[in-house]
Length: 307
Ligand code: GLN
Image 1 (cartoon, rainbow, N blue to C red):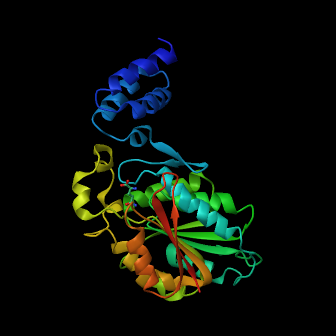
Image 2: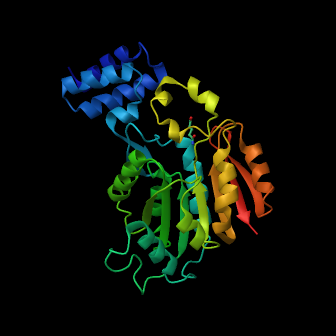
Image 3: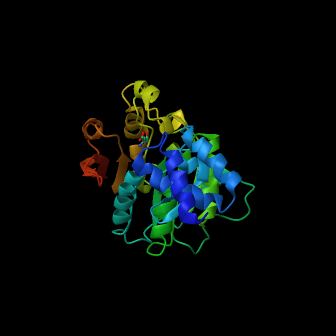
């Protein structure tokens, strides 16, 4: 059978439970993944027919201009999240860089994460820190890594701190940092955004240029009735509490004060949440709030520019 025939027959079989639009892409990806091994293809088709997401089966997915390892226990990067990265890079591009503390805070935080046994320092003495970025609920690291990867030519002293609570997702985060060769720029923390991170919160007030997050935002009740594929994804990465807004309140209360004057907060949100999140941020009186639409015309990112 030629590769084309194999793709066609795979597509036919997928159509039993996968819709037409997805079946085309899925068939091509699965055949590419099996790479001529028919048993591997058979196994992959079975898993897909049982509702497992394509991305978990092939174990990787592209986001922005980077590639990420994914699997059970970590949220799959979504195309709409690229808007948040666009806005982050746009903002970082306006910074002049080299206006910082020479890496003192970055070194301190690095030691907090890795302990004092680390030999030397994270940021060398002669190196300046151009921009400090914080990514909350980092998951696979798709936001933190693609920001780092795309800004370091302009601001080579950028440091991105990525916080993720789930130990399973945290392993993917570390792996994706290494895979995309941004170890010098991205520091992963395994901690809880809602109640943890006390060292970081206590020592970094007014220090960050940019805080970004795509937190869990699905309402708890809606988590019970998601699409089959999404049901395979970790509830921890989806469930934003009864009204889906727990993380936005926590970010406004606990994390906003880490931004410098003129710093930017960028939050991804669900389809009908931008208005509520704007209200939460407006109530802080910390800055100007703006909403941005994604490629599908959905209000997807809420931004706050600190006064
Ligand atoms: N966008 C995801 C969904 O489709 C939700 C991700 C999140 O909660 N941040 O369900």
